[in-house]
Image (tube, rainbow, N blue to C red; front, side, top):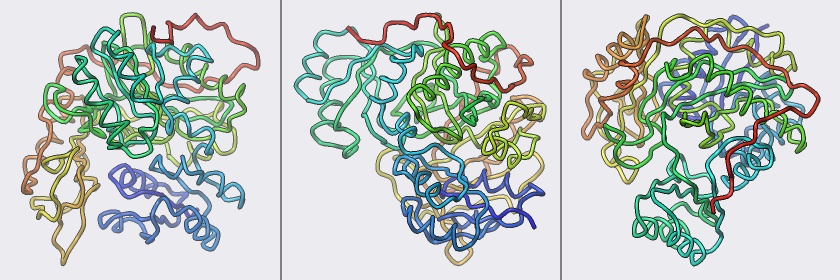
Length: 453
């Protein structure tokens, strides 16, 4: 008998997870809660929202689910892992306390400061007046972050005091992000190439997956507001073998050591959003789950069975695990509704979707629904169009070829995904390997100043 697997979530990331897990010979049946119409072609969708922790745990218990894989961050922050573990149900993700690395920017920055993990200098504010007063004294640009979860939209770069005042008013007074704006972090704006490193950990060892580069701004040329991600590609040539070693030594291993010292249980994915500065890699943010849209480009290159990788983490055997990767590159272009990440219309008819996936291109659904065999838009980020190829140029060409055929009123997408990397040198051979936590205090170079003066 094969495994019964439950995937939690409803977007393109979860579509990618279901797609990948479906190819495993160890999996007998996949459920997805709540899933979407496209996911239902590969998995049995369950009408339970990802925040319905009790309902999901009841479902997993009744249906004898062998493994649950969590997509969205909100249910991790709410303690879904704690509830599943209480009922002795296997689930891949960190518990509620450890999930604060994503659910609270203040928690994450203080964690990094405490464990000497390189990040931008910062200050924390809980009142509007103090934050405004501080902004009169700093050099611009600065970065303002809502403390809590804001669907990837709570980080704003501001270039002057007037903009800073407006942003702080929006977050702390108008509460555009709700309770996420009770506190804010103000930090120095780092300069360099921004990259994404997803790693998996069993709490003892940590293994980096292939590095990728997300494109967070809404418009070409990195203009416009931050979004949840408008596209990505993998691997990125900006992560050289030397930088890989720096990331392990100064970021991933210190995180693992810090989790142990703080008595935080962590089995799952650790996503590090990094800025490659002249002084070395610096952490912009941590996420505690698979990234979106990074998952859409990393998983297609994973030759090893994803189930084997997850089970190695669950069984605390990651140190002896060596995943295989497909050669070449993958690229993802997100097609979004006009107005995203602000207000946007829904219910627009989608045409031109390919009848079936090809060997080198496929479409993952995020904000869509089906009505009488007609596909309609139903969200901000609508589709993730993925192409693979022998190199980045080929992968991008295949993704954009599909994008050009798809139509819906108000469709927007970036035309420069991966463009800068095309002129960069080809990715060097830096095969990720698991690194085990050494049970002793590690010699870590002093991190840069982490209190913004």
